[in-house]
Length: 604
Picture (cartoon, helix red, strand yellow):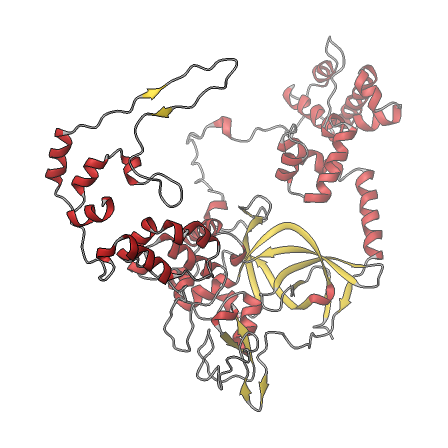
């Protein structure tokens, strides 16, 4: 009964997909809708698989910095399996809220701020235990250190200097040390000090009556007297006494100089009503995160001013009223909800009949029905071959499965128990993976949690797409140029599934080249040496084309540039210029570069 009772503040698993891992959330509110259903307002936590690789690198860098300062077990002392499973326990807190149906709750878990003094193995020894140390902002995709981190370690300890010996001089810089503002061994009695404080309050009330802005904010005498009785007036009076060596006559003369009475204001008086409303709105949204409050709501205020106003605001009647309203709202809301254990079968379960396993990831079509599709296939995580229940896992074309234990681990922790080569990105460099497109394809598989094993053996193999190489014969190349009327490549490309009449193309080619119809082309092109080409270019230098320029007139539009070079060869199949057009080679040079057998075939 207690295990199925969920309260505000509990960390729970939510299921939004039958195949994806659970979502980890913290319940903030339990609200009952108009239809009678219960919705939970929750705080979102994100896993490593939910953020980008760039942010993961930043998280790893932050973890290394913590290891260097920690005196407990470091990550270098862990095994590969422990390092792999420790990444599944790391979460990232966010300030994002969402509402989810309470019926999607699948159990409780525990999430704690990373304790630097505790060994990381303690998180692996406990079930359903997670930790976080960074805050993730899904809107701007950033990672920041949590403001509420436990400041334990040598960085946060005070350095206590050695005690000075008698007669030894203090070499510290006095300007950086504390300043004494009160002497308890003063010649004045407590009664005299209290009388001076009453005079200081009276002067403050009179100063507010003379000030126009204060008269608007405190229109009545009682409000002015209350404002003059705040701590800022008392601090100024005591500081004045100390600076004048507790001489009452001298201190009173300073309270009322020649220009008029001294007016001391604190943050409660300096802030306007609109600024106070903005602060209350920001406090409702961000809590005591004063940096975010200043950045988003009050950028013209200093951080010191905001903090001072907060602690003064907590002493006002406004704060007491808001606290009572929140308590009344909390009384009207649900404090706990009972969710029965979810017992419906998972759609990813592999059905069994007569003790034989069924098909993985959906039924196999009637055209192809193997007798034992899973015979010898092991669990993708622990390689077990026996389990009371199997679950399909990964893309349907991979035909992978997990045992019941590994499936529960996948749902809770978002990964496999055993590390894989693709997840660790430790595959050795090979010609097949030197292509950046292949590497990006493998990284996407690892990031999305896709399986890389496609057999029951422990060896890893990446299932890539089938590649092919289209080798074009010489006959096909010549047919594209000679048999354009019959081939019509543009129309054939628009209908890729319609077969091309190969016999008609061969017959047309045979009619145009009767001498080559009985035997295929066997001539091979031989490339001329570079020295011959350089010598030819020295004898026949290329001429620059003459460009005809025409001035635009008011009657006719501006003409385009026209080249006077003759059209030596026809355009290519796709209507673009061929090699000779782009490189400025004429027919004579092409004839010189081509072998004799191809010259007779092309220009004959």
